[in-house]
Image (cartoon, rainbow, N blue to C red; front, side, top):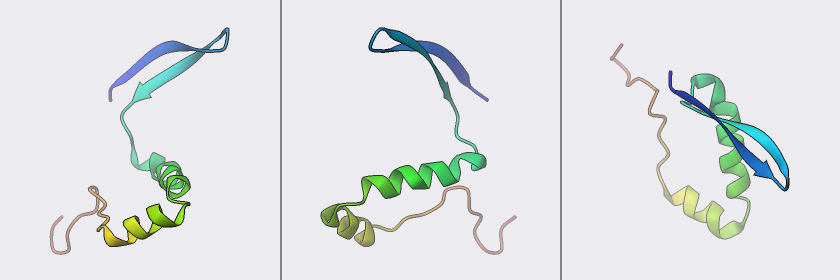
Length: 63
């Protein structure tokens, strides 16, 4: 798994930031971020028109 540790500044305070690959444990938080970005009506209508697919979900009949 890839990860990189670096520091970013919050005002004058350095804060550690970790960049890493997503895992299935992150899905709930990632979905929450998407929900927050789709709160306005225009974005919500656009999302309804798009087909959302989980790239980790296996197709039926495939293992």
